[in-house]
Amino acid sequence: EAQVTQNPRYLITVTGKKLTVTCSQNMNHEYMSWYRQDPGLGLRQIYYSMNVEVTDKGDVPEGYKVSRKEKRNFPLILESPSPNQTSLYFCASSFQGGDGNTIYFGEGSWLTVV
Amino acid sequence: EDQVTQSPEALRLQEGESSSLNCSYTVSGLRGLFWYRQDPGKGPEFLFTLYSAGEEKEKERLKATLTKKESFLHITAPKPEDSATYLCAVQAADYKLSFGAGTTVTVRA
Image 1 (cartoon, rainbow over the protein chains, first blue to last red):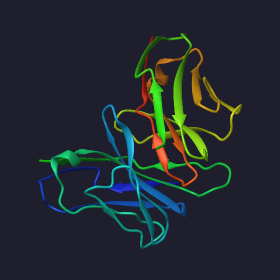
Image 2: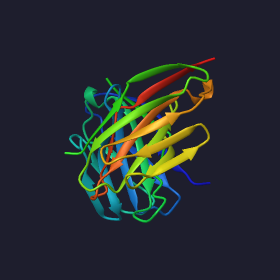
Image 3: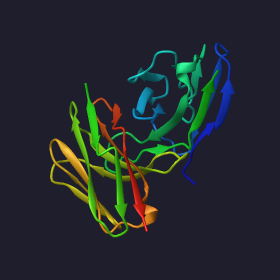
Image 4: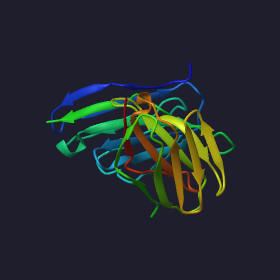
C-alpha cells in the first residue's frame, strides 16, 4: 500500500528541546516536502526536496532544518522549538513531472511547544 | 510571489443544494492546479489535477474546472458525507506548491 508515514503523530515538548519528526514514503518518489497548517492560514510549505541531497526553502523555513540522505526519508528537525512552532505538520511526496502528478500526504503530526 | 485565494471561507448547504467553490490564483508558470479534500485531523486527500485552461475533471458529485486565473469546484446535489474542507493548491514551474486557506463545507441532511 502506498504510504507516507510520519512519526510522532502527537507530541508535547518544551521550548528549546530539540526534536525530529520523521517522514518515510514507500513509493520511490523523488519529491518530498514539509508543510505546517494553522487555522486561517492553510498549508504553508516549510522545505522541499527534489531528490537525494537536494533541498530548498519553502515559504516559512525559519526555525527548521531538513535533510535528504535517502530517497525514502525526509526528516524535519526543530533545533530549538518555540511556542510559535505549535502547529499541525504534514509531510508529502510525489513523482516529478509527467502526467498524473499525484501528491500523497501523511496523516499529520500535532506538535505543541510549551 | 505565488498566491492562492479561496472563497468562501465556509459554506453551509442543505442536502441536494448544489454550489461552487472558488480558487483564484497567480503563479509563475503553472505546472498544475490541485484540489484536495481534508477531513478533521487527517491529511489532505487528492481529488483532481488540472493542467491547462479549459480543462475539466469529474468525480462523483464533484467537478473541477480551470481558467487562466481561477478554478471552480462544483458540488452537485451534495450529501452529508461531502462535508469537509476543500483545499486548492498551485504548483509553479520550480515545483513549489502554494495552498489556499481552504473552504469548509458543511452539508446538512
